[in-house]
Image 1 (tube, one colour):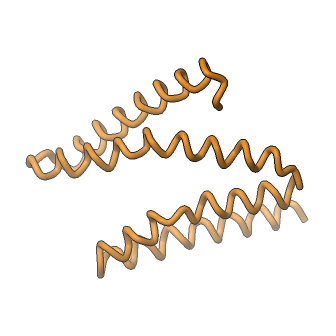
Image 2: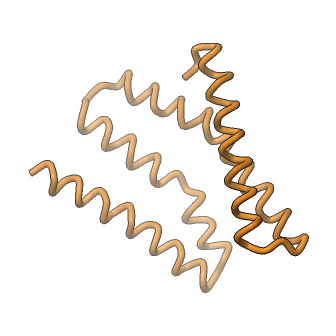
Length: 117
């Protein structure tokens, strides 16, 4: 039965991405609204609690999400900046992803030094 639950989680998560991208074709602001909601985080928190019933793990997970949202923002700062300066999508996305990876790496390093994550 575990594989059926796993499959259901995947289908639901995939459906959210498809719905958001389809709505974004008609209205970028409403597509962005759906994606900006912490739906994946909320679902993951529910699934973690349902699977473990461990509120301490859920609290640690939620705190980790909070701290790692900060470096994730770098993609959404650099990507539109580069695209508005006539960079090609692939190049701008590549640079945005690389900067985000560096921001994540730096954040994880800093947080582990202070035992925050």
